[in-house]
Amino acid sequence: MSGLIRYWAAAKAAAGTSEEPYEGELLADVLAAAVARHGAGLGEVVRRSSFLVDGTPVGRRDPAAVALPPGAVVEVLPPFAGG
Image 1 (cartoon, rainbow, N blue to C red):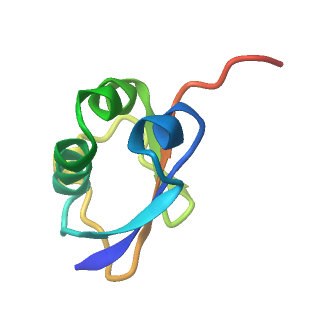
Image 2 (cartoon, rainbow, N blue to C red; image 1 turned 45 degrees about the vertical axis):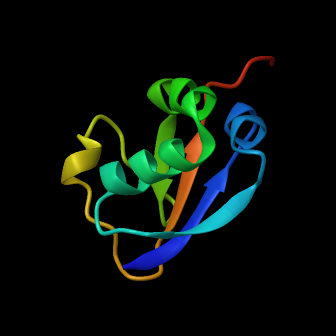
């Protein structure tokens, strides 16, 4: 399956891009591939982040159990500071 992964705030800075295409069927696989591509800095951000799949929060579900539909948009949302 393929889709689009969007990075916000610290995730965008760590990845060096705001979005990119991905290939994968499970959220865990897509995230692991992104970290392998962009390095440990993104890995640190991903560990603290929450995720949306097509606008729906993943919540506390294990990313290895989150199947991605064809063309899904995954959003990586690091903790935001400020108010």
